[in-house]
Length: 338
Image 1 (cartoon, rainbow, N blue to C red):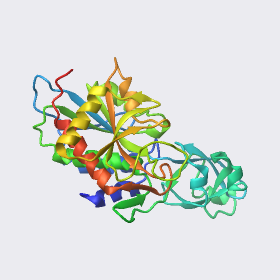
Image 2 (spheres, rainbow, N blue to C red):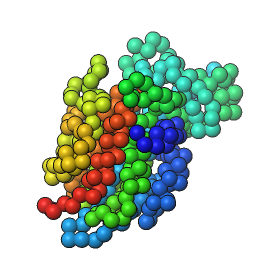
Image 3 (cartoon, rainbow, N blue to C red):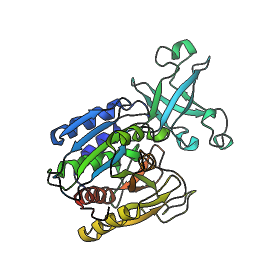
């Protein structure tokens, strides 16, 4: 996979939902040399435009990948210095338990539980964070109510081209869009908007105003999707290493069949391995783009991911590379049926 060092840097940056500045600044530095226009909207989403060559079938295509990751916010500091927290996005209590977290100021903590973790029944309210403080007053020297933290999760190689790290959701999508932008020489038949959104984990908030601003003809979410090829609580066909996933549907959106057909045509003509994606839990920025304005044709490109919303997710670098190629191919595609 190309430029793996950048993917590593993206995963190790911290960008808890609503606090994406560190990630945005990293991305902006990467994309500015290749963009025609760059702006940050009032919510903090980064909008990057690469103009194409006008033609009779030119379209405005909006790709959306979210910069934010899941984390926690301190809601109470106990007398003994323990930090009680609430979700910033969906966290698995069992996955967080006994793991390390880092606050924005660098303070490190370990996640504990008010009792046996199996008795928490995935209630994050039963968790606490231990930063080593001896009292409430001691803890308040380092963190306050409202402070946010996220997981530690090193970027490490596994076997057979797999890698593990935190926040592949959705730094893989951000990475794929950056690399696709590098390849865009401005000769494409479409204007391409590479949009790095905020607060997706809190309800796809960032993509709503960006889609309203751009009014795209086509919206494509670049994200991850849960794997089904290992023992888990989900059932389906998603397989790590079997190619980039093309979204057919999830509970929040049904992809436009012409957009899906175009993506599959691109994959076949370019020799890009792909697989269909159908999931019955979860959603992406495709949902808010789909319902923007008077409606937008939407689709999704996703990297199949094991252990999502956890400190150590797993993806295939081949799948990530395939996503870059599909993002580039569909950007060049001439849509003539609408």
